[in-house]
Length: 66
Image (cartoon, rainbow, N blue to C red; front, side, top):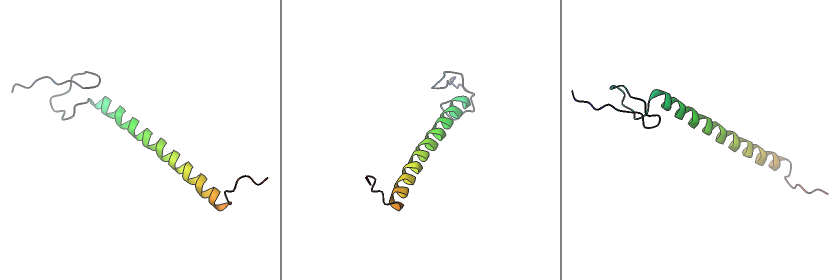
């Protein structure tokens, strides 16, 4: 078996020969966490926007009642 030594694309650490990914486990976990946090932030923003639209719809949404 003449396998080349593989390295993580992000941090450059040596990968185990059984690893089928291009990133090490640590970099993969960090990437998944960033994606998860980004989706939660986007979902929270969309939910708050929806809440504002629904609330304005129930209460007339006219605004300038002076």
